[in-house]
Each structure stands twice: as C-alpha cells, then as structure tokens.
Image 1 (tube, rainbow, N blue to C red):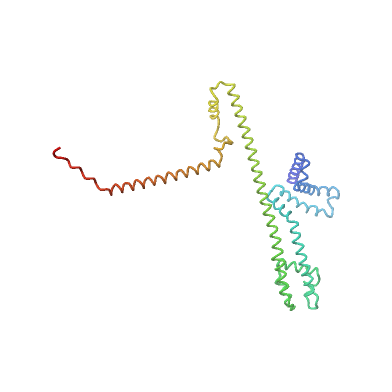
Image 2 (tube, rainbow, N blue to C red):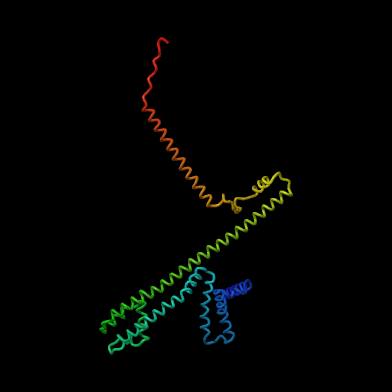
Length: 312
C-alpha cells in the first residue's frame, strides 16, 4: 500500500510539473534526476513482466531501488547547494588527482626498484607496480603506515625512513589537504551564492506583497472617492474619518512618505537624544552660574546703614 501511495505521488508530481512548464522542465538537472528515479521505480515491474519472477538478476534490480532515496534531494536546497559546490570542483579536483597519480607513479617505480626488486625485498608490498600503488595508497591515507615501515626495517633497507616520510608529507599533508581546501573554498562560494539568492527571493516576495497592499489601498481610496460622490458628505476629511473607524490595528499599511521611513525615524530619534543632552548640559551650566553668583553675594561686604539726621 505504501509503495502504491508513494509511486502515485511521484507520478502526479511529474505530470503536474510537465504540464506547468513542458519545455524548461527538461533543462533542470534535478528534474532529470526525478525522471531517472521514476524509471528505476518501474524497472522491477517491467523486468518481472518480461523475464518472469525467476529471473537470475532480479535481486540486482531490486537492490537498485535503494536509489529512490535520492528523491528527497530535490526538496532540500541545502543539499542542492552542496552538490553544486561538488560539481564546480570537478575540474580543480581532477587536476589535483592527476598530480597525486603522477606522484604515486614516481614513488611506485622508486619503491619497486628499492624494496621489491632484490632477493631480500618485500615482494608482498612492493613486488610489482600494482601492489606498490596499493601500498602507496595506504601510506597516503596514513593507514597502517607504521606496520609497512616496520616490515621494511626488518629487511634492513637504509632509505626506507626517508622514502616513507617524504611520500607521506607530499601525498597526505599537501595533496589531500589541497583537495580538502578546494572543496571548502567552492562550498563557501556556493553557500554565499545560495544566501544571496534567498535574500533576493525574499526581497522579491516583499515587493510583491507591497504592490498588492498598495493596489488594495488605491482601490480603497477610489472607493472612498466614489462614495463621496454618491453620499452626501461635507468634505473628504469627514469621509476619511469615517473610514478610519472601520480599520483594525492588524491591517497592513504601506507608507512611501519620507517622514515615515526608517532612516528618517532613526535620524529624528538621534536628534531628539542630542537635544536632550544639550538641554541637560545647559541646565548644569545654569546651576553652576547660579552657584557662583551665590558665592559672590556671600563674599560681598554688607552695606553700612545710612545715619538718619536727628534734626530731620
């Protein structure tokens, strides 16, 4: 039952996408992957119908059904970003791998000549070029390199330490880290591009919503103007006041006036803060002036009283 439900959903999605955009649908790589998954889904039914249920390789066809899990990639943008980054690194990674292969070929020949050609050589690890390549791969991944080095030491090869250390430094610490660095660099570029696309998409969505709200406001104003013509109002202000009573606090409103923009409000609030600071400093200055004047009055000598004339 679950099989039938999911297959029906996949087929319905495919038909709807092709119906909406029948040409550009085939230009998207993820849409092509969905078509490939649909082919994989119907492959067991076709094989059972054509070859029968006792077909020898039917288990392989059933095992391929595990690729259906790739379907969720088309729904997750983050994974798509990572896959895009991996795709962009193909040429750079190929160059790094070619250099690593050349390095391994040179050391494979040296290893065979130094450690595998003599009678007391290590034929198990360096007996021929293919075995030497596999041994160098183990050294490049630094997996069990100490055991390989110990086997060379037991056979008293004098240059084994220099050979092993130089190859590990070149292959593991340089080329493999170079490979990781290239992957990280392209992944960061893809993540930044993904974030820019998301911001652009969000901005376009906001602009569309703004246009819808503005259109609705224009229709409301036109309706008000028409109402003013049909109904006897004193003036347009009275009509607007009546309209305000019908508004709710949750109704959206787009204002294009400069006085309602966020930069203007920010500047205006900063100006008010500066004015408050100026008034506070002037107040402190006035208090200081009053205090100084009070001290000056205290230091002034008292005026002598005028002698009244007894005769007067």
